[in-house]
Length: 195
Length: 261
Image 1 (tube, rainbow over the protein chains, first blue to last red):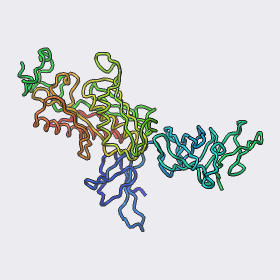
Image 2: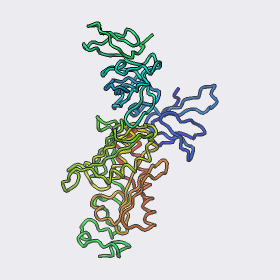
Image 3: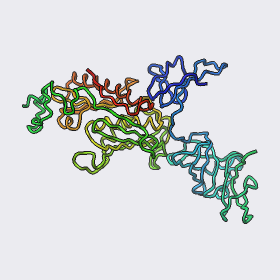
């Protein structure tokens, strides 16, 4: 959709706010209603969808490296459980969506956010173990220490775990995983992966 | 001799030793500066981005003999001891290498410059775009040749832009020294040691906004006006060099004619 492209750097004027909407890498200054670039990259103009009430094209800056991804509420993350306590489990966020994070971010899954039903019967130690890889959604920015994560959906939960014997376990139900070597069954909050 | 001290000899009297320095006869208009520049001429400026592979963004700046390198890390998780904050944090550290100054130093962090760098940059970054996280800016002065802080500030804004941190505008900074009746743009270490006062202006050139103004020493109002005018002019010229550096048009672009007159 990009019609004309041109290199811009932060602070360059992209156009008047009356003519353009600010997309990614651009912002509108309220003082003089001008759209400025806030990143280095290529200027692209995207035509509005024909049925939208706002007929201004969107101007955005893309192409250059943006800063590393940071978690925001609603994003799906892949995290590794580091510590399991009675009321919460802490996990290091490794991927945001499909992108790996450049810097480490800590998240916690609280007892009430493990699953959607019967949340009073959840046992943290029956849901996660240290080292498990979980898929979770970021609930909120959390507190000063960590992001709050939730696994309270069918497709969220443990996606990969190792048994006590050290083998990668096979999910057999939404609460159980089995070790292929010993046949031992361990409890997890298992994610429903694929169809 | 005392008359050479400027318009305010009553409070300022340079020591006889500084007056006798050979190269700095600043009572005389025809005499150029030690490095043959005009009064309102900057040193040749050189910028380069992406010099530190481990950092998210980095920049190197070289103004005559002042050489600095700035690395930007993050946005990354704030320290655990920090309070929760809806907006991003900026953490700045300016340090000197042990060999930066003519006298071998300790290579310690410069607390004052660190907080001034923070103040100069915090107004320019869009901190709402990285809530709860911290961006770390580490500036290292490799060689101190005068006007260290302005060079660090300009270089840091370039490093932030290289790291992809959203900014309202590039930040450029220039200082002028008051030497007798002359205003000296982009002073060297030697000129700084003889100055009656200094003015550091930090601005966002394409938005015509000043993020920081530091004035020390004795200044009259007309002098301040003139100094600010010289600085804003030089700042907008520097921003052109920085922009072309960011776009990679000519990374080895050198500019010498930041002459205001």
